[in-house]
Image 1 (cartoon, helix red, strand yellow):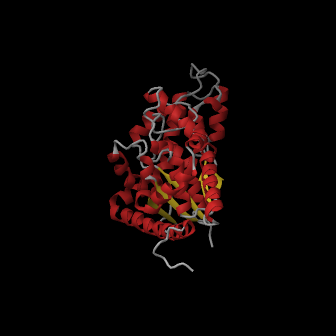
Image 2: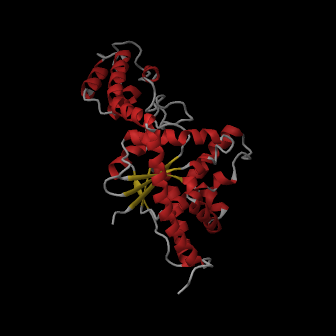
Image 3: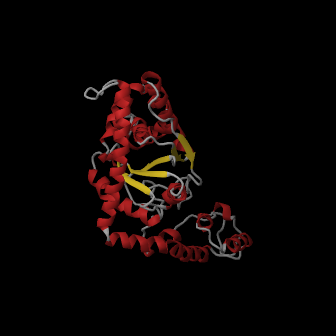
Length: 338
């Protein structure tokens, strides 16, 4: 039997290049060899969008369309909605008894995100909710409800997987061997730089190229991308390694990359020309995606059916897991016990 992969993405916006090269491209490579479940993590998205549920709802189908257009095959992967799997919520409650608040606050990923929230909303930390602090517990429930063997992640998410493994070990120690202990599957290119040169492309940072950007939006973004600050005049020699335009040339595997690099270093390539070339190469690169996206936009019932089928498959697995969990915890009151 194929091993099970479980991974997820929050429906708070459309796919951008950070998602594509940092995660989705790896999921596409893995879909032939693993039983792959892709979670649309709408409940987790509500941990910091609880006062704006329309944002989450509006992006569920948008994100599903993006994933299919990017290359996920609905015949090979199961795309499902987190909120439709009630067993995840049940497991979250059970697991909450196995994790101390002190341990959650020590989680490096949680610490970093809490620090960011405090900087944004003030130093008192009152904006940090119970649901936000506890999302690693919910994430552990996501993974174990479907008995995931492997979880594709970037290095910054390894602490979350380790927390899940700790919960599984503690559960199995108390109640008996019931749950699988998942392994992380480190993704290639886990962190993609933004247009502004920052180490991470992100929705909230305003430095992202979205796959569904119009031609005009794409051109505007590329023309504003950060280049070598030491290059002042057109014929100045430059360092392509500090230029985001060159970075994206490499990312999309421009077949002219050697020329781009050599001309840049020799001062024979102006930034405007280089950006215009990148724009044309980007249009070519994104053309298959745009064509597939147009198809799914025009066949929205097919998208809904894919999401419904994936959710049904995930629910069946989660129900089987919950039967084993309740039996181990001795709370299967109406089941015959041998």
